[in-house]
Picture 1 (spheres, rainbow, N blue to C red):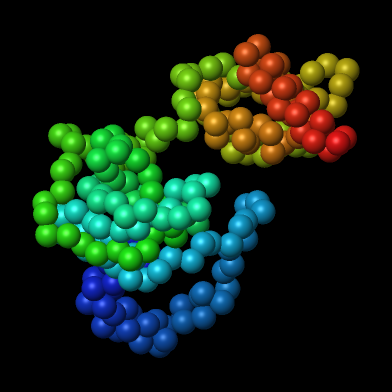
Picture 2: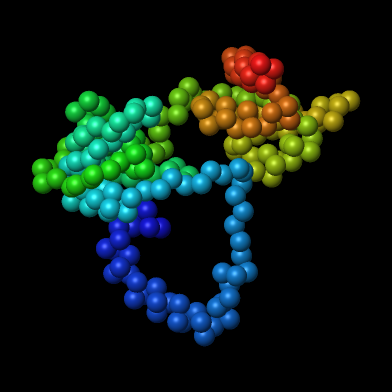
Length: 232
């Protein structure tokens, strides 16, 4: 929540939160938070530390539609360089928070991780925003190497396949046991992108890509690379 709402807004809402807590304290819902818990779906890394001043400056620049001056260290770079950003919005991806912005070097919207920023200061010059730009559309069409829709055919061990039966990969999913085996064939229409590949790799030997052929070959090559790394 702190990442989505500027601190000044949270400060304004604090009295309302306090009043809500007092109201709940006298009701049957007062201990509800102690009755629920959230477990991570998979191995989770610790979130990176973001300087509160950096976050506040970024939020201010976005809200005021002004440029942001900051030192930024790119991945693999030894030192940070001072840059001028045209901020468009904030993007949250898991624990990571990115400023979506334009720069003189990159006139198209790019992602800049807030934990790599320092010495930030909102400018006074009005920032440039591409005509018709939408953060929601940007997030939806995020560059994760989409290659279009495919008809994915997988062979699962029956026990592993239960989770895609309960949580289908898409609306257009079919399921059938493979006669004479303990496996199940699942077919679904999905987007061919990096997220799909990462998910398939996380299943290891529990799932086998049968079609499309190009994806099967890519998965086989990734498996061979992993085997070579472990055999080294």
